[in-house]
Length: 364
Image 1 (cartoon, rainbow, N blue to C red):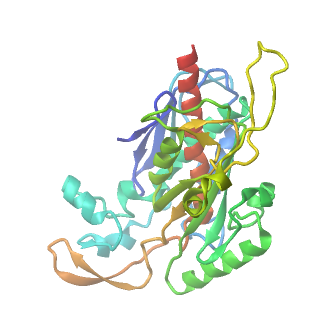
Image 2: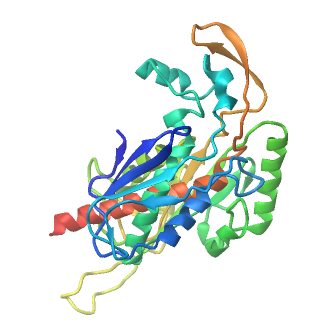
Image 3: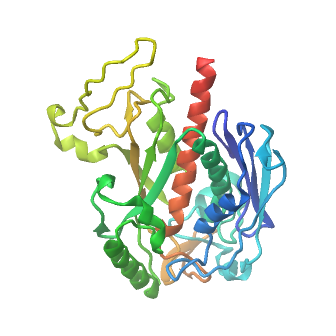
C-alpha cells in the first residue's frame, strides 16, 4: 500500500535515514508546463530548519526529476523523482534501538514486520512526506489549467484558534509568517505557544483548514467513492493526523435541518442547450452533497496531535517487555502544523485531480 490514487497515482519509497526519498507519479496529463522552480518552492515550504519553530535539521531537499518530461512539458509517461538525504544524525537514535517509544509506530511495526528501522522512525518518519509534496506540486500544476486552487493554513495551535469561517480571512497572508496563519495577531500568539513548549522539551498539536476553490460539480462517486471520504482518507494518511471534518462537521449536530440546509438560488439557464449551473445561498455542506462536489467551495479541517517525540524523560518498555525509561535525543518539531500545511495541500490536490480524471473518463 505504497501507492495513492486511481488514475493520477503516486508511489513513494525511502526512509528518514536512508539514502533518499522519492517516488513515481503516473497518470499526469500530457502537455502540462512543468515549473521546476514551483515544485522546489513547494518542497521548501515543507523543508526542515526553515524557522525557529521547526526542527533544526538542515536539508536542502533538492528534487531531481528523472523522467516523464520533455522540453519542459509532461509527456504523459511516469514522472520519476528523487530527493537525497544529506544531514542524518543516525547516532541520535542509538538509545532507541531496544526500546518502544510511546505513541510511535515502533511496537506496531515490530509486530507487523518483525523488523524495524529505529533511526528516525524509518518509513514512518514524516520525512517520507517529501514525495507527497512533489506529487502534490505536479497535481497543482495540472489543476492550474482547470482553474482549481487549493489553499491550506494553520487555524489552531493549542488553545489559540481562528474563527471557523475561512471567508473572514485573507488567505494571501498565509505565507507571511512562520506559523502559516492568515491572522497576524493570532499567528504571533501561536508562535509564542510553540516556542514555550519547545523550551520545555514538550510538543503541541492543532488544526489545519483547507479550502478548494473552482472545483466543478460532479466529482465523486455516490456509494463507496464519495469525494469527502477520499479527502478524509488522504488526510488521515498523513503522519500525526487524528481527525477530519468537512463543511460544518461536528458543529452541525447542534442545529436543526431548517438552519443548515443549503438552499439553491434561482438561476434559470439562458440557453437550454447549456448546462445548468446552480449555486447555494449557504455552504454548510462544504461543497459536497451525496458524496459528489456541487461546485461550491470545498473546505475541511484536519486535526494534528502533538508530536510524540518529547525531549524529556518518559516511561516505556524495551523489546523484551521490561520497564525502562527513554530520554529522546535529536532534532524534532515541537509542532508539526507549520510544515504540514503544504502536505495537506498536496494530498488534497492529488485527490481532486485524480477524481477529476476519473470523472472525465466516465463521461468519455
